[in-house]
Length: 105
Image (cartoon, rainbow, N blue to C red; front, side):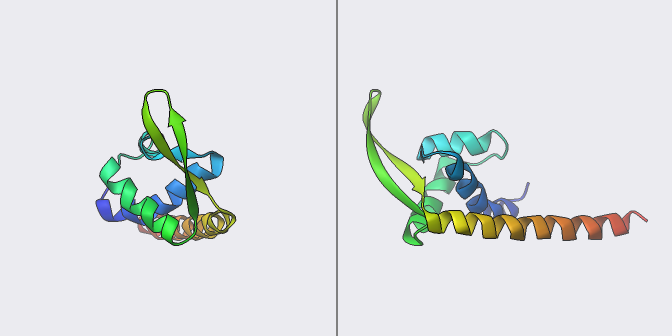
């Protein structure tokens, strides 16, 4: 998949995963990477952007494996944004599928 397409939907993916539960950065990468190949270098700038926009908040939690971990939690504003982006995604996929299927005729 091209990098441009991934970047366009990665914000929705992060919000969707955080809608399920709070995660720290590496966990988010692992969870999303189960379906889409991404790197940690991609996720952290996006998380900062989401935090700056008020879609996520952070908190520290002690870790038995080392230093405290910064967890990301979706806000109510982030939940609304996730629903908005999800509807936009569904509409886009539907439209693209109609165009592609037209080419098959």
